[in-house]
Image (tube, rainbow, N blue to C red; front, side, top):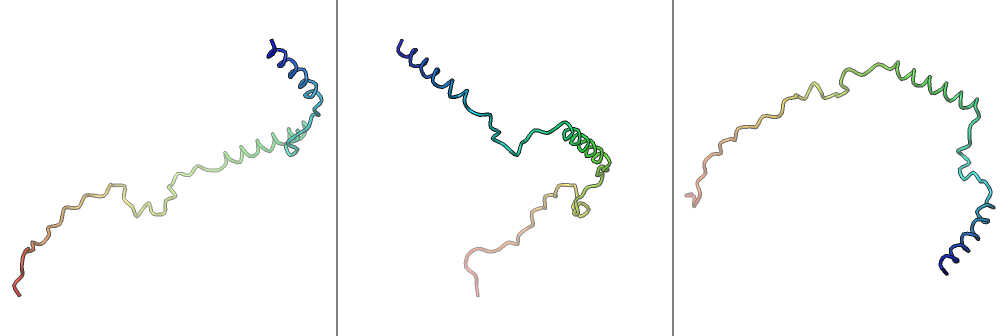
Length: 92
């Protein structure tokens, strides 16, 4: 019963304090826009999207070394025969 009454006291003390807090805009750079500003933004956005549609698609590769390199994987080179060397003492 004590826990319930303690919780009720805490709630009753915090509710008036919460109600007294002013409505503060914590992000002043994020101000709400007027309907005219929203309409202008919509027009700008539409013009931007239309300008993106006018850009042609890049069909050619932009790789400057593309003609130098081949698309085939490198072939494994045959192991070169090493000259036979004599091991042991040499006669000089």
